[in-house]
Image 1 (cartoon, rainbow, N blue to C red):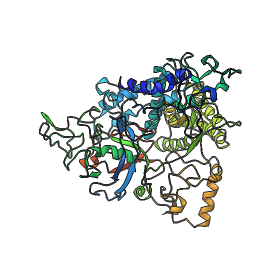
Image 2: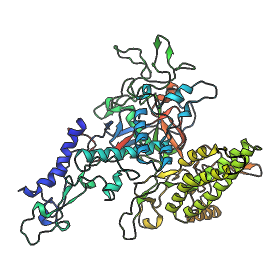
Image 3: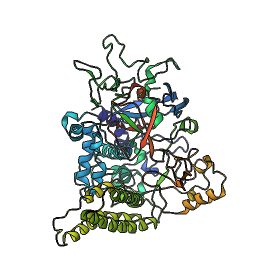
Length: 640
């Protein structure tokens, strides 16, 4: 209800303004030219009477500011990767709670219903429920029940990779904006969007019209798009055309996304409740005051303030006096919120953030909105300079599929050999490899859409064709390829775009020749992993090799994130028994996660601590929450 009331104020400034503009006697004038705004008589220059950004579902406004980011505890791991430094974070929005199992099942239900022709998209959206399994522990009940049983519906979702979490944020953005447009009568409910769902960017680009309400569109105040003045002194409403919502109307919300590391840490500390005038009087170790983990208030004295592992073998306390009342995770609103009103910023599950991990990020990054991981992209234009048509096909990382197949085949041959079933598996893998090579050549030739269609054909038809051919052989009528479902699951990880989305590409150096703030697309390695930050910065042979790599249009990082241009963070390469590259777990796909979890000691509850994990992997202790950019004033209504 609160969301609807807030939006009503904003929407009056959009639709009601365009409906009443013709009858207004006094119109606002431009302070630059003196021309009337929102007046079709002079061409219809638009100025929205914007009131306030609506607070999206589940979000809390985090008023930004300056703080000391970095280590607040002892450096017991001796990584020295988080030197304290002062930074400023812009105001933003953050989810009040972690994303729950119920939220994720909503996402899966929508995906299954919308992309029935693309089963790999659903597979990619499905959490890894087997993250609960342990070699020497009995966790099968959690693997079977945790995601789907209603007893856990308000518990944080786990088994989610960083990539899956990012995809969820994009899906949530579209569903929220679609609902806003339906709520205000601009779109109609449309549950039949098979393979062509609402997408915010596509809608704003004029590429989505499946659900338009013919009676709910905005008046287009530009008379040249209607019947014009036709020599009339006064343009009437009937002379004007209608239009869809634009960004300038301020009706749709910015995208949901993962928070940056700086945003997450700032929000977790909740320092808005810990200052006098302009002074922060007491730096916190945890999201609450004090250096202890129990509540000091008289009413709740001695109660544990977060869900974590108190000591070896102690995950929940003793029967009759459970300390955190949770053996694994707990409901997302358990325990006390911090001063921003955010729950479980310490404990329960650790949380993905947007940043790529580097040990020296604290020394390199900006002190305003610090972030490492920028890969600048732009929308694809057609030959006429207009935004190209949206995708009608799922897009795949074909190079990643090729490398996945190499690893899968090597592991399969290492584990099993000799039986006739293994020989038949090898036949299938050999044929599959030749087909993926064809798709790989298409991809590297720039025919990415054609390559993706070929991959879909492999999954939908060609793998089954091989199986049917084998079943036609004498004595093999009942034979089933058990590896086909495994291969399909693996390939699903390489879906990178889904139907209904606009086409995007990375920016290039040639289109940024006169730009000084950036030149290329990918700055993940900037100052920490690129050529200039390596010992080879003036080696002519190395420089030539890097330049040659950049000229290969099909060159791409492989699925584990090893980048041939990255001369600092590489796995060990061996030449005649001697390592010739540093050995490290850090790659361009190493993402930061923050906070402690149900299986961590209290040390990790401090928001200043940081860890990393591969973006394509998931665990039973990492979840996430979404954030959203705050536009305009850093404070809400009633602020200064």
